[in-house]
Every structure is written in structure tokens, then in C-alpha cells.
Amino acid sequence: MQFTDSHCHIDFTEFDAEFDSLLGKCAQQHIHRLIIPAVSPHYWQRLLTTCQTSQPCQLLPCLGIHPWFLTELNEQHLLALSAKVADHLNEIVAIGEMGLDGVIAEQQDNWAKQITFFEYQLYLANQVKKPVIIHHRRTHNEIISLLKKTPASCGGIIHGFSGSYQQAMTYIEMGFKLGIGGTITYPRAQKTIKAVSKLPLSSLVLETDAPAMPIHGEQGKHNTPLTLLTVFDTLCHLRSEPPEQLATALENNINSFLGNTG
Ligand SMILES: [Zn+2]
Image (tube, rainbow, N blue to C red; front, side, top):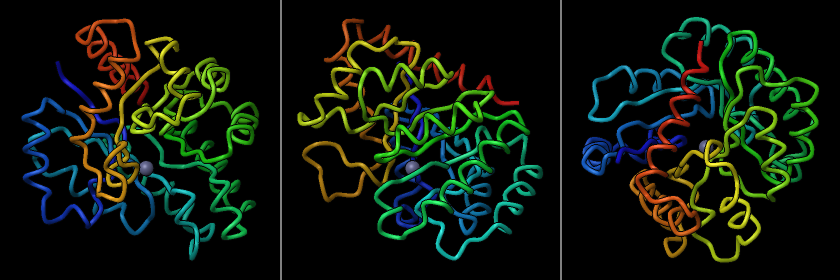
């Protein structure tokens, strides 16, 4: 069995000290591909350079602007994103991480700015024919209505999916896959767990969101892509398919996501 972490931030400086050993361990555990969304213009070049260097696992970069990182950014940074994407179109696999975060909107009073940055990145992805990676927090309704206005023509991943079966199916019908991560290891996440247990297998991809989103029992610790195997084990308990069949399907789903890239 082989695995892909569809969402982790191992380009962050907090991984510097363990970077080589961590990737070595991922390769040993058959985590052979890592998709790394970008969060802020400050990290773009560092991320691209890391992914260009030979590594024991395949590192697949994305370019985008995360809704947590908008302070100090302005519309010039959106133009810079378009230029950077054009320069690295063959290297990147998606536009993201983009999205809407309801908690940050309250804390920073930046809802309108979040919408501007999200819509721009949706347009950009369609223009360059790339899928999108979308962050959500208390914003399913707003994201769904923006996606109805501007459908993501190459689909994408709803990262760190948590929500109901109905919300999941709405995204799936719009061409999205759902990023299944540490949330399903928390017994309190019953709504998400129930949804994931019966969603179409063709819609699921695994992720860790490392260093964020630690699995149950590891709260407060720094998360790594190695916890992908715990997420997979948890998923195996929720689903009726045997592990080999699940693993093969999850890899095929990533291939189809990557196949959507231009
Ligand atoms: Zn992320």
C-alpha cells in the first residue's frame, strides 16, 4: 500500500531541524507523495525551491494565499500570485490554500478582504486550468454560494473536511474531493464521522495538515505527515471496504485530482 498526504505544510521553518529525517521516515512508511499548499507570499519561493530539490518522497507544491495570512497583504499580492503561478505553471499542482475562515473574520474584521482574495484565486485557478484547495471554518454556506457563482472548473479538495453528509454531497456534486484528516480520530466529531463512513469512496483523500490539526490524544503536540497512517487506520474502521481496496482507491483519487492539472 502507498499513501499520499494531500495537505501538509512541511515547508514551514518549524520542520527545518527534522526535515530530512522526517521525509526519510515518510518514504519508509510508504507515504510517497506530499502535496504542500502555500499560505503566504513570504513562503512561495522557499516552497518551490524545497520541492525542486531531490527528496525521498515526491513533493508537490501549490501556490496561493491562505485566509489567515491577509494582514499586511493587498491587491498587489494577488497580481504577484498570478505572475508567480504563470512562471511555475508546470511545477504546481493546484491553486491554494485559499478559502474563508469565519473565526478569523470575527477576530480581524476582514470578511470582505477574505472574499476578494478567495474569489480572485477561484478565477485564477479557472484561468490556468488548475484545481483548488479550499480551507473552511464555519463557512460552508458562504463557500458553497461562491462556488455556485464561480464553479471551480477543474475541481479541487475541501481541505480538513468537517460537516454533514449533505454538505459533503454538495461539494462532491460540484466536482470536489474531501480531505479526510485528524478530525475523524475525535469521538466528538460524530457528524463528520457518520458522513465519512457512507460517502462515495471516490470522493475521499487523506491529509494531515501538519503541523496543525493533531490527531486525538496528541493535542498540543506538533503534528507530522506520519500521522497519516493513524488517519488511514481510523478510516479503515469506519468503512466496509478492506484496507487494500481503500488504499488503492485513495491513491486513485489523488491521481485523478492531479490529472486535473493542466
Ligand atoms: Zn493548510
